[in-house]
Image (cartoon, rainbow, N blue to C red):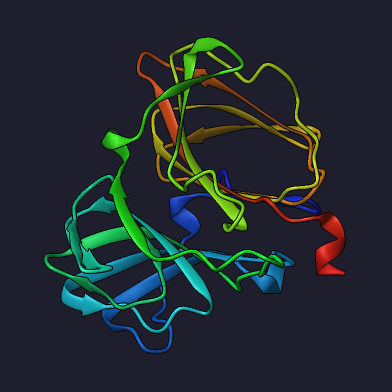
Length: 233
């Protein structure tokens, strides 16, 4: 038995079904690939598990990395839990570490220079209520700049908080549950989700989340952004 599920427009992948395998160029490291072009996604997302001094291979385009355990060095900075980096350069573990990694080919925008690499820490980003609801807080980890063709946010729900509507939109999502749990609607199904789970939502997949339990629920979520839908045709 497993909570994992695979629908025509969504995927729920739970830790009991994870299969680790090294990616080309990795040293003393392995990856749990959650989603990629083989499933129809326009991005790749995986969890990297690194031994001390382990490293990632070359990025297949731009790379966003969010540290969940341990410490890594990326873009010339040491990053601990909650630290993140954007760029294409090397990533090396200072200690045993885990990180969520998002990679995709960069989609250039006419008249706009490609973004430069940067690092940050989630705690330094201003938290803002979604739709004016203080029980649902969002932190944008990528600057609100048209040069970026993707957005990565953390969203934190107090117990009992939920999205205001069932969303249906053109963007696709990759989502990792970081803390707590709740109920996620994907298409016409409702799933119990908890920390460690991964969710993929294809374009136009109906989606909604409500937090359950006695502690806040939090997830990291990716979406394609700032580009006209015709640009990928």
